[in-house]
Image 1: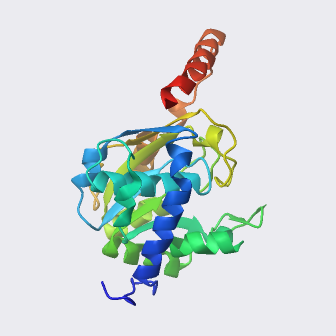
Image 2 (image 1 turned 90 degrees about the vertical axis):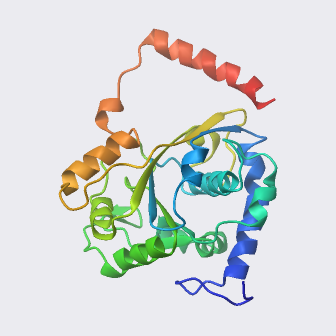
Image 3 (image 1 turned 180 degrees about the horizontal axis):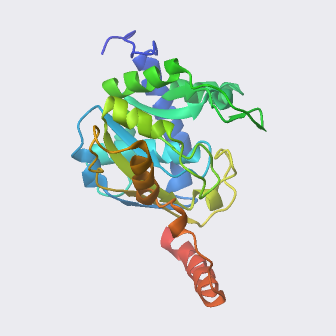
Length: 268
């Protein structure tokens, strides 16, 4: 790789590689040390092509979710089986990996700008700006940028567009799927909201069992499936359809609390 070789967005790959390496070393203990990350589906990642893959996931923090995915994806591609042991996997990170994020979030500080350089596709949210509800037209350049990233590699997106659970999925994700016809891989995460603050930058609580499940690619008829049917399938696939929301009984809640107490020993 040439020292100044760039990706389609003009980012120098040598610099991006070192940013990912440093960020991985700094964050590794957040998922294997302070807390424990349980993983399912490593083999699915290894069976995917090098580009044209769209990962859709539920969302719990601004940054901890996607950083964990960078760890898991790189570890799996390096031969790790459902674990992120031995951080040596990050020495040769997958550089054509991107994630969709709100432009206003990625411009707020030097740290977020660095994280953006490591792989963000920054888009303008059409429904929210500066903490206020808005209604804006979709920027076609944002859609094109996601298409460019899919043509170059893998893209991670959070179709709810918020860290609040059970919110409806944005139809823009279905438009992207029908337009660019990527392989669509659902990812379900849990434990990150309890582990980190909302931004995902500060460890809020230790001893939490986190989880990440990579599911088999969805079978989508890109020509005939409607936008609504695709959104409905995505909601079920990432377990954010309202049907997953239920009232927990007192007995179930007590059992859940007892289970959480037992999670600490699993870190050993």
